[in-house]
Length: 407
Ligand SMILES: [Mg+2]
Image (cartoon, rainbow, N blue to C red; front, side):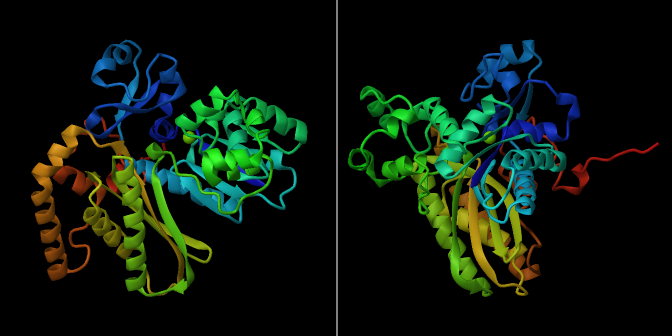
């Protein structure tokens, strides 16, 4: 069986993790330069606020209802995300990170999945203060169906019995299925296919013809047949992940550098296709039984050399010649559409950025590695992104660590 663990209102939950005073408070998180609302918790949604609304235009609702607002703090979100994923690694032999706030976990061989699902959710909440939901089923696509419905129930749902599976499929609109984009959803609805239960009744060959093999694999998975190579693009706003296992374990930094550059290229290709920029890069390196990760915030960019440069610098921080590595991953987060304003901003600053990176390299070459390093805060201040409502980096910057006073 496979579990899909999803963090609830992740960015808002991260902001609340160190602010117990914000329990039950409406919270919103803003985009780069504090332009838009990009995340909100249910309390904020209930006031009529929505993702994509302009911050400025929403001020009356925000001020009249004491909505608490934050600039996006990807340093904090990435770090808490990793704490959640590390907690999951202690609870399952195999964890596949799907986005900043979702992961698939292998639960085969576990007895009493209801109790174990609760253990997983309680452990994550205790260790990271992030509330989660979990869906458990025999395939990834069914686990996703279960997780979506778990949100409406008490946080967990297991699809193990045929009648439970049938009613879950009947309660899932096709537009909410994993990998069914809005144009396919419209087409299906037009043909009278409204729910996942309707969808699995269509003959397989028709699905393959009309929706390519991705649709066909989705259909098989919904029937309970696991498709090992099923990959569905991560929701753009949740990040882009590019990773592969090495054919045999690798120790040579040079090779890992090449691999990470290649995966950065793939990730940036996806980013450009979505006409988006990223403002956070995370790199991970896995040895057997041990994963290290490191993140950095950057000025929103889709400029490959910048992302590779950051990725390589990050790699140096976590690489050690003591280990052989079997997997490396690059994650791009803080994905936002390229706006006209940003393009102009980039053009104006391109030469400045190149100059900066060159000087940093020169100084590091001369005075030693990490003399100047792309710490999120330093880069952020240098590049002048407007983030007037930024929360402290509670978990990654010494001066921001919470202090407990004992009397
Ligand atoms: Mg979530």
